[in-house]
Amino acid sequence: MSSALLAMMSQSPMYAAWSAVAPDPDGFAALMDKIDELQRQPYDWSAKIGRISAQTLLVFADADSIPVSHAAEFFALLGGGLRDAGLDGSARPAARLAVLPGLTHYDIFQSALLAAIADDFFG
Image (cartoon, rainbow, N blue to C red; front, side, top):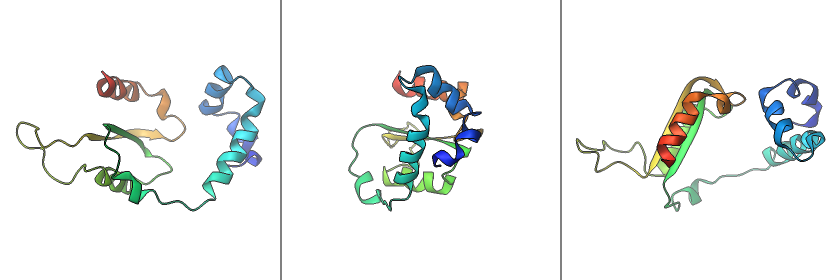
């Protein structure tokens, strides 16, 4: 995801959204290099995830860079998907998981479904 891909990424919806609001639209290449550097660092948040007590909404695309199985594992670390919520929903976890169909990491933010899910969660 380094700036070596800038020509390709400059045609993406992500770049268009960045350019519309960024104080320095020319800084996209630097952002790409920072993301590349971060992605090269080993990380494992699994020990810390279970400590999150706030209601949490996890949203992924079904064609995302993160496998749906990993999204489900992350959700389970937040207590989700481990049991039936019961007829009255009283055992529902504080966390929610949404896997949006037909979307990718690059176009998920344009989805009306994402807006509806976020609105319901924050509403």
